[in-house]
Length: 118
Image 1 (spheres, rainbow, N blue to C red):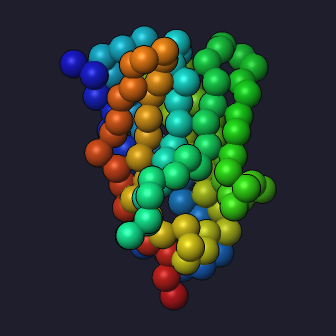
Image 2 (tube, one colour; image 1 turned 120 degrees about the horizontal axis):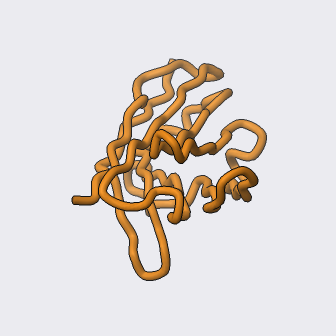
């Protein structure tokens, strides 16, 4: 069956870094647009970044608040998408979810908590 398993979250201090991973199985990973969303307490889930399908050249998107700090990447050989998060700030505190999407198909992971606090 389809599985998306996020990992790499944790508690960090401001200006520190984390790298989230999302391991996929049960579908043809390379054919799916991969996204990272986050949801802070009391807020709606928001799109953080996405990366296109392909084999060598990928198109990426970032929400304005993370541009220049976060980097999304994918390794199709490992069926994994990553989110490198640098210069983390308290406002980045949220549960981070990965999402795989193709046409009307959409799969979600269970989320990983990221807490940024001094």
